[in-house]
Length: 179
Figure 1 (tube, helix red, strand yellow):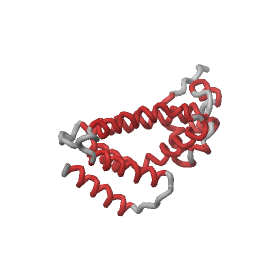
Figure 2 (cartoon, rainbow, N blue to C red):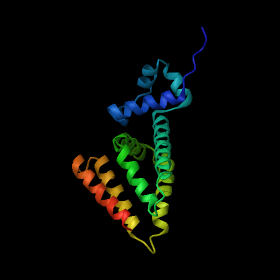
Figure 3 (cartoon, helix red, strand yellow):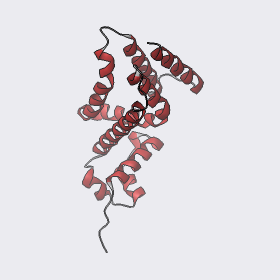
Figure 4 (tube, rainbow, N blue to C red):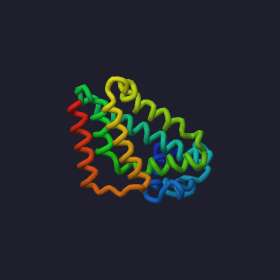
């Protein structure tokens, strides 16, 4: 019988599904293996620990976010495209971000050094607003309003109804458009 090759993308997607369903703390290498019909050793070959797998999941989520952002950015030629695109990307995909936040928090608690990819991503995301902060502070404030809303919501520190969230985003978008 030929040895089966297991796709790393399937491993990551399965880990993402488990994190979304149960939370990052409940992710196990064994459950990933069971769901894709592999052995625990097959998973450990690519991801030597649960934290390594979670780190890879977070990196893949950043890559997905960047791809969605780039796709949205290509359709917006406005002067405030960076901010409007950021808002649009959050609005379209915010449900997927809960598992990302939980995975980031677990990495922060267990191995903060693994957050380099998250720090790099936020450095990239904040760059357009920080560059212009000396002469135009409003885009930075609006970006921080979006990030603050989502951070509080994802950390389950603030309950925001979908209706209120939509209203907040509409106001941020309106202010961004009028800059």
